[in-house]
Image 1 (cartoon, rainbow over the protein chains, first blue to last red):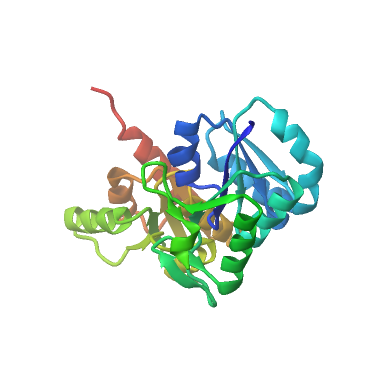
Image 2: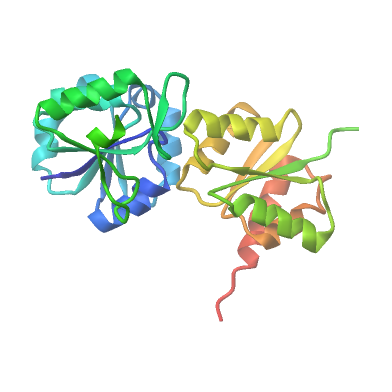
Length: 157
Length: 124
């Protein structure tokens, strides 16, 4: 399977993703699903400036996930698929089903969200969307780094 | 007279206050540098912290590494502000030089800081 991690992280591409997860998983590319970044050449250039040269970045709008998913599934290059919020990951899971596992890596405080873990703040809507994903067979866990223990969705209620 | 240049150190965890504190302790120059941590915040909040620390005057933002939320936040502000420049790979030698070079324009200061920081890396 080409995508080795589906992660929700509101910092998008950053050290925990590139180094913390990317190195142990042997990821050679990051697929960032984000409509704003996919529409901005400047943002894409910024992210390319920031990552190691051996890491490939692909910027994809949500609407293009369904068309790209079959290619991702057979691509031999290990990839991390990243979204900045729960709703976008849910859209990915619908468009690229089945997705076996979703990692909640970092969702920080915003109005309407409450703390579930020091690095995970969710709104009630977020939680219900994640419950819906779990009901379709996707395992949802929170885990900021590979060296920390995963926390099951039920413990985030 | 134009506003003096100031520096903002943006880094992971407790690194920024440590670098600023040690720069002040060694140089005796206080009030030139401000520390910003990315701890416990998402993208928008990091960007707000950086913008608040930079304020309205000319500044150089020093960030710890090019691949990270600190770098991206600093670069987004720098894009909107021609009087704000960004240097990555912050280290103590570049900060110690910077605190005595406040008369330089931001672009020249950033170039000098990058050079001083690189010059300080040696292999034994």
